[in-house]
Length: 88
Image (cartoon, rainbow, N blue to C red; front, side, top):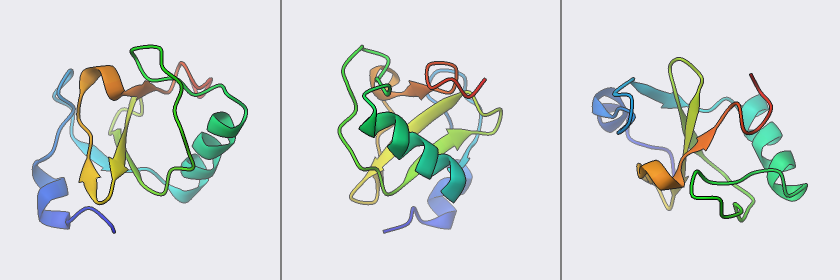
């Protein structure tokens, strides 16, 4: 279930306050590959269990938040970083 567009318009990163946008299909595939390889960790150091079907990323491309059952999980410790995934 995709995040509602009206909700997406008001969501932002709880840390940086940068607006969020849906993670592209290519990036979602790359994220799932990182999860499968054991390279994806949340900010709190725990491994991400996958696969992921939907995620949001900050407009600057630095922080990723998973969407679980249509609900964005916007907790700082549950964020992933593009740097941690080797994307930047």
